[in-house]
Image 1 (cartoon, rainbow, N blue to C red):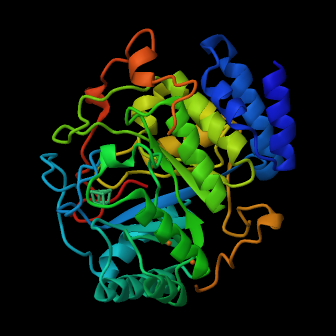
Image 2 (tube, protein in one colour; image 1 turned 90 degrees about the vertical axis):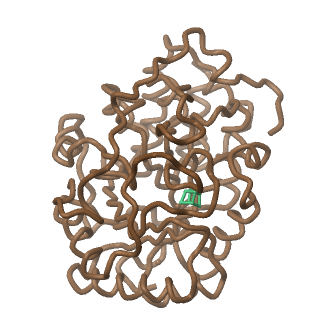
Length: 385
Ligand code: SF4
């Protein structure tokens, strides 16, 4: 297919495809799916070989958020029966992080619910990072604390954060449909503040919110324009008790096309398979490893992932290798911040193909696969890693 050879050529040169080419990837048929994955795999291997970076989430503060992001089980008014707890103590967070590092994680992602941290919260996280570094000096720490001021970003960097995560989640045009308590521009500002402070910017999306193909391409192009270093691709986990509980709009094939599109648009950055992979990709997860170069190990913030050992087996069985702490994730030309050092921390309508409306057979709701997290951080049970 000419489209795919063009995209491989561009991706291997680090060039941006056109919007039409990105849209065409999303419009490919299931008959072409393996060709699409193989093409994205060539670009992935050009920049990242067969390495898979493992990241481990520690939910420092769970639930009771005043914001109303409709996809989120921790939102204002959520009836999802998730764990709710206030800030973990530094030692508790460090113990959870240690389990992830022992399981092979190279990056620990410290996440807290809420609109954004107070300066006191930032100091708590600084203490937590110090406790983690005391046990594992070389681990990369990413903070994800919501909207951040430039001074808070600078403080996190100074305190030892390597990266900051703040996802754009969806296109600017659709943003007010999924959240009314903050705006797309607020999220863009936070990504910019983290970059300006010298933090490695991590920002991604959630697919399956009801967006069009145009909307997906919009958000991925926005991420490319922000020049972020890592792009987590989440697939909506439709939690009972949230407004999007009935929104099951994704098929495994659709997920793979989305991942491939992200890889072609962001060829030389870390593309991370994130929340929802188990419930939406299901038995096709190993194919996604040919496209992404990074995954979360173990559980998510409020739901359980597959067993950490199953993740490691999947990587080995598919012929990939876990990236070691001594390897730099990003290609040299991206000039990443010092991974081990101190200072680094979640449209228009042409050619619209709305997944929810136009997939010939609506995907079945797999509520049986959504398991609320009951182990690890904030509980007395050991973490999954
Ligand atoms: S995504 Fe973050 S800001 Fe939005 S409701 Fe959830 S925890 Fe709050």
